[in-house]
Length: 123
Image 1 (cartoon, rainbow, N blue to C red):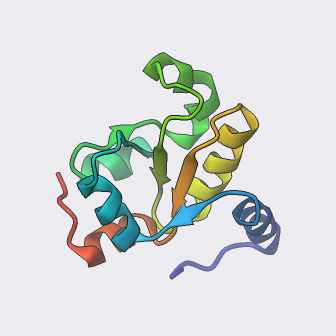
Image 2 (image 1 turned 135 degrees about the horizontal axis):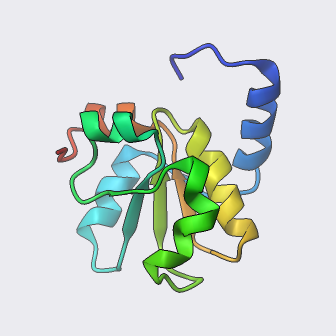
């Protein structure tokens, strides 16, 4: 997206993106409006979340994701969307959840910037 990332980080992100499902903000809007249960996790840093986030999103920082995800009582097939600033950290997070057995973890490509551009409700 807009930031300049290191080659090794980008390699990890691209590897994760090849293994996990993604959606964009338009797709997220559709999921928010359908009848299926959806949990949205903001995996950015706490200060980023506190500066603004998708309405109804749950904060679960990428640094503690694997440790704390089970505290949320989700089934392995729960529909989960993860977002960060642009979709890089959330791709790695979604891959990690997939490795833990969460079969329906989706990364939001475009992340927070996409949420804002799409005009989704924010808090």
